[in-house]
Image (cartoon, rainbow, N blue to C red):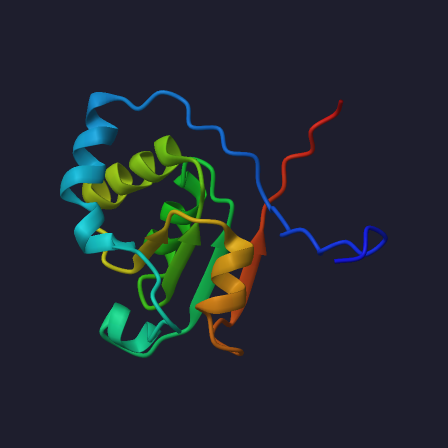
Amino acid sequence: MNSNTSTPSRIRSYVRREGRLTRAQVRALETLWPRFGIVPEGVLDLDAIFHRQAERTLEIGFGNGDSLADMAVAEPEHDYLGIEVHRPGVGHLLLEIEKRGLENIRIINDDAVQVLQHHIADHSFDRVLLLLSLIHI
């Protein structure tokens, strides 16, 4: 390769902040992830994942998931997919799903850019929410 030519770098949409998992979050990841978590392989079939057709919202960067859980409670006829890289936040949302008895949320713990590029079909969602944290250096 010519030294003047560079390979485009992969876009990274997050900074991994693992943080500390509580015992409850560890339990939720172990016991609830198999039911509500998605490890994408190929293009996702959202009708099969949610076992129905419904209006769908994608939330990227849901943090601890409280707002996503609130939306799912308020609109049980809608389905919600959340993408988050922060495992303690994923664990927290799983606990909220269990506590509130929610069936209309699924979670992906991965890089949203990769998920959107490889696993989500066009026109899959009626609404997309992107919550950003600005970091000042």
